[in-house]
Figure 1 (cartoon, rainbow, N blue to C red):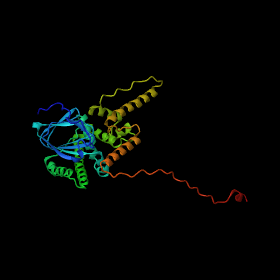
Figure 2 (cartoon, rainbow, N blue to C red):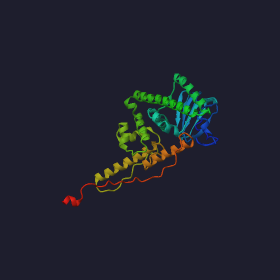
Figure 3 (cartoon, helix red, strand yellow):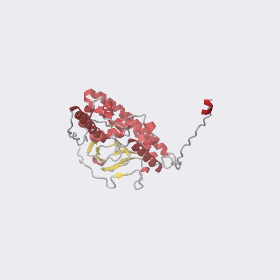
Figure 4 (cartoon, rainbow, N blue to C red):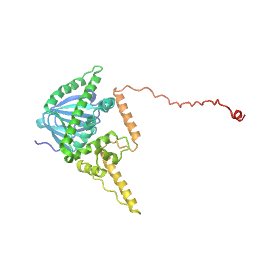
Length: 344
């Protein structure tokens, strides 16, 4: 099937903002995109979940493109350029816009499904950068038959104006995300088992990427990453460079320095090599979540998420901050015998 190698940029804008009044995206958090193709390249500052319902075509992500058909599921992280091209211009794709506030508000419920991070963070990373690791989620005909009424309910709830409709929509959206995440986690487990120990070796890097995303605000060492994959640091680094394309630019080895002492030089080279490899793994962290000061960066992300949720009425606005008062130190009076009495 012929298809263009690249798509043009979107006519209206290249970046869609969920809170912008120009697009009114909060009025269309779920919809079916039908017969308006090609959907040219664009990005947005929120997550997007796409399910192909009818028709065949091509899905474009960054510089790559993939043939797609009914049942294919794609999660698009923020600031990733993507688009669609339909065969004969006819296609139907379900869109669910997922803001950061949804993950913040329902983080306890979503944390019970390990496939959520796999769906929204890890799978898009490998889809964009790897030709050897495939985590595509494809729904069969029976699963699509069961999911279609749920998608139609979300589209219906997204257009209701009465109070409480937002809560119903959020709960249905979280249920849909959890179900898809469960299917993806089970499918990934089956693929890795079927591949066998040797052929499934590239899939050993998936837990490492998940660990980076889960602990991006902590101090991550190369030994921690290697332990998650049950590989040596050297083997893990080589596997990443072979499997994932942005292994990008292949970081050069540090230049040796003149030192006195063979063992001292060997230790310095080992430390420089580990720092170089750790810098390589930073590209797989959520952008820009390999902070120089992890605690401060984590607090900044939390404050930004809360401010966004409050501005859209998702979370109640907090009251004025209380003035900080220093705790008063009370001294206990000594009631024992004095020095003069002790001498007597």
